[in-house]
Amino acid sequence: MTIRDTGHHVPHGDRTEPRGTAPLRAAPLGPFVVASLLALAGVFGTYLFFVRTTTGQYIDESALVEATQLYGGRAARAGLRFLDDLPALSVGVGFLALGYAALVRRRWLASLVALAAAVGANLATQVLKADVFTRPFRGIETITENSLPSGHTTLAASAAAAVFLVASPRWRPLVAFAGGTYAVGTGAATLVNQWHRPADIVAAFLVVAVFMAPAAWIVLRTGPEWNSWGGFGSHVGSLRLWIVLPTLAGLVAAAVAVVELVRIAPVLGQETSTTNYFWAGLAFIMISGYLVSTAASWLVGSATKGHPA
Image 1 (tube, helix red, strand yellow):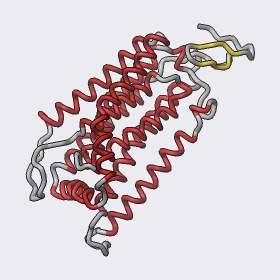
Image 2: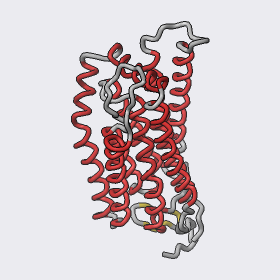
Image 3: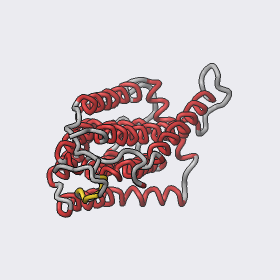
């Protein structure tokens, strides 16, 4: 479709863009491959440190144990109800979004790619957890079965990522923030209820990124006319606020992690940990979840803005 610069607006799929906005040229593959490979390295790095080393196991297990000292009663029951409903909720929201994109917006290929990536991430999580990764005994009292990556977190994060991929470009920054918040909340709930250690959740975010990065590149090639947009700040769904908020949350979480770990460091620490590892673990979950969602918004946004036809 050729767009003439007449100063008027024309409908373009589910969006209305200025006629001066040119259709998108095919996005370069390189950044998406690099993002996928970095996420893959992160999965194995997380496993090697937090599962294969004594220090990593101690930090991870301590966060899980300390969760019982902070939350109980109504908070625990609410978290358990959320986790019980999570599979149906995630699958339902994902299928509604993909079905809408396919049937109403006629984005069949994009919806199939997003669905395939989500299914691939969940299958990979189960294979890694059951058949690839093992949890050796390192002198730490813990459940010997491997639980990395978290299946619940993978399901929630992959559903959010699939919705992000088929969303209208101008809504993607907001969808990335909302989806990241949903995934972070899911991960936090699994920690609070002692279902998963922090590293399990971080690895789940990274597994989803491994599959969704190349899927995003394919989706961008399926609809160059509807993937172009006006850039950050051009629409309420594209406000820079949706990048700033998760970035600030990640920075605050990083500061919390540093403070909590310094308090119990062998040389600098002055405290005997009671909840420090829990707060540090929760901070790691926030950092990784929001980092992945913000990186996705930036990567896809930079690949879809300013590409002349």
